[in-house]
Length: 199
Image (cartoon, rainbow, N blue to C red; front, side, top):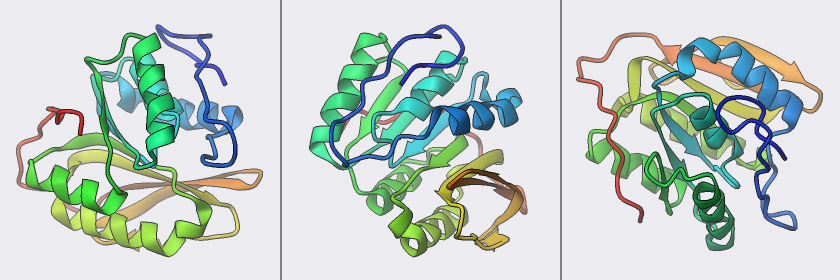
């Protein structure tokens, strides 16, 4: 798997062996970044269920200010760490080694805000993921003008509204679909772009 564009264009991303992760396909990733191109530059990104980190690393390559990668599988984290190291991204990319729900609570407690939040959970986590997204939307870690993207199976349809978010659009690519959500109301919080230390 290669980085499509930006300062790291053409560099190869290491991917864990076996079936531990399901990397976002190249065509889906290219379509995703074509849609969100105007949102990426200087953005604070949160990559949840990040696996090898290919989406977050792509965002950093294209000019995102920072990215927090949420991943709980220790063997996968090892590969993710190697990717950040080989690309010299340790100062802009941090790993939060927690289960997604716990990570969202910690980030909310720390007052973090993100411009782009990307969810790529196992497709079997559909209901669980919807509940996590609902909780984070009410907590306000998505910046007032931020964008949340949920990658899911094409035969599942997330609600038009989840918590304080509404579905802006949905795009389908073979077996995969991307649902794009934005906040229905603006939060009265100051946007933050800090990153927690590696846990």
